[in-house]
Length: 209
Image (cartoon, rainbow, N blue to C red; front, side):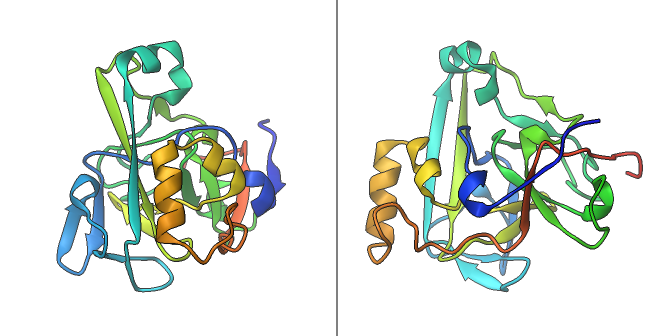
């Protein structure tokens, strides 16, 4: 059985790539919009807090040699219904460290009503994307507080800046985050923690899809 570990917000941020790949559709008041066309100030429909304005979108582009040299940088591919009915509605690619909101009834040793945020790479049965791709760009959406929103119908988490997460993002993105949130400390310790339980290395039960 896969080991399940519950962790605190201070421990969850681990080295790895986050973000949504091009083609992911997000819900907005004007209908679905692909993440690569999203702009600062656009409103996104969130799971718990209604419409929230995008404060920042930072990207990370990896070329073919980087992907070939480190397969863990390749996106995780979620086929339609990989998590549950209509989740996602169509193929979705995300960074391996990007967290998905998984219902508790899909997890062993978890209350059925407890929704948990889990890195995509820790959900068994998902496939790595093409490590020989010419280039992959990850899009990270940032709000004033951590949010969960749907990408291709699957609930995913927005980017949450933390001391550990900042080590793994480009320098220009770190500078832009500090410019966007000048009232937060240099290590973003004042940025709110996610409100959902955080877990990793889960025992996942996909048999009910």
